[in-house]
Image 1: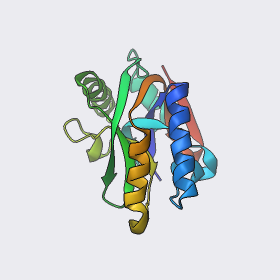
Image 2: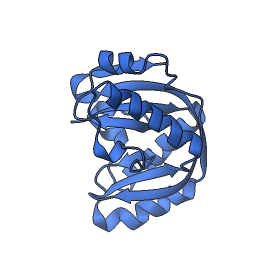
Image 3: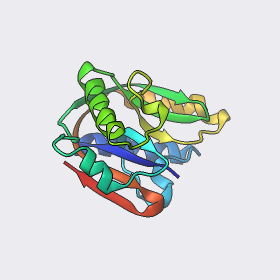
Image 4: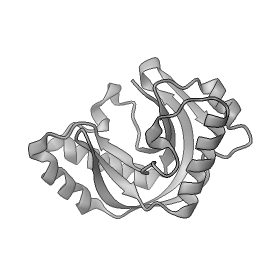
Length: 171
């Protein structure tokens, strides 16, 4: 399992992504809605690691507003290797700089973060499904494109590790 530092979205954007999760599920694509006892909520991860100690993360980020009220504009759907489907916000300079600050504070405190989240490599995204069946990928992408664009504001942040039942809010 993995742990993440997640940014949460405003009520309207969260609702729209949850409706998309439902639509994908009704078409045979398992979404994050049905994983881990429905504990997932729509989010953009700033950092991911096999484990994150919430106390160490909070200490490393002391004085940093992790849940900065960033505006996100989800404009595209994408795929990662392994049939992962996601929505992508426009990678604005403000979003990329915010993620770089968070990454720098964490790694500066000796917290190991996945290489995929290193500034310059990070692809901002909101995961929709972890394993879209190959035969359903085209239809799933079309369904995503039907709901775009989605405008969102970051309203919260937390360190989460659902396997260890951790969800610690951050400022």
